[in-house]
Length: 59
Image 1 (cartoon, rainbow, N blue to C red):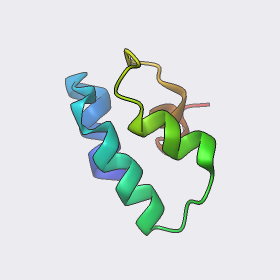
Image 2 (cartoon, rainbow, N blue to C red):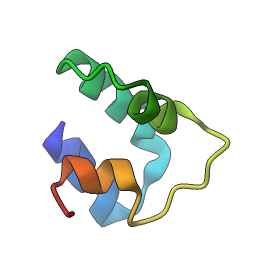
Image 3 (spheres, rainbow, N blue to C red):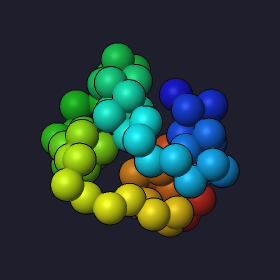
C-alpha cells in the first residue's frame, strides 16, 4: 500500500487510485470518505491529494 501510494505520488499517475482504495480496504480501512475519494473517477487528482498525503504521512 505504501509503495503504491508513493508510486502514485512520484509519477503523478492517479489512475491507480481505485487500486489504492482496494489496498486500503484490504488493510482494514473502513473510512467511506477515504475509499469513496479514491474510487471517484470523476475527480481530477493532483499531487497533494489528501488521501495520498495521509497514507504517506505528509501532514
